[in-house]
Length: 96
Image (cartoon, rainbow, N blue to C red; front, side):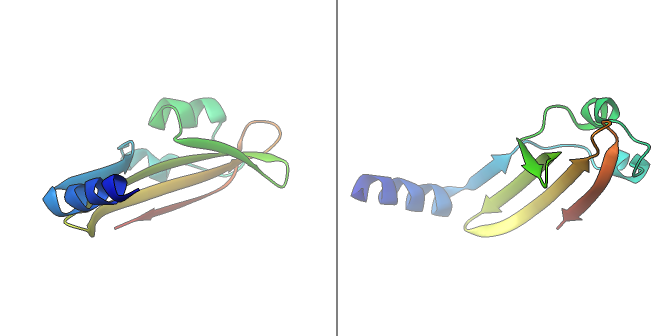
């Protein structure tokens, strides 16, 4: 356990730690609820980092977070909920 803690501390102090996969944000403005399809979302952003369910509806999450010397320097997350017919039900996008 001590070795893991030391490795984590060294990585945090030494340089950059990244979680997720970077994705372009320009297509976010093209997303329209009940119009944009799963296929279009996949075409814009590729494979999501995480897939799940929200009240029986499929969800896709795209995340990218970069930390440098323990500080968050870049962050963006797109969360998409799909209708049963494969169109976007709702989405949220946040970035720093």
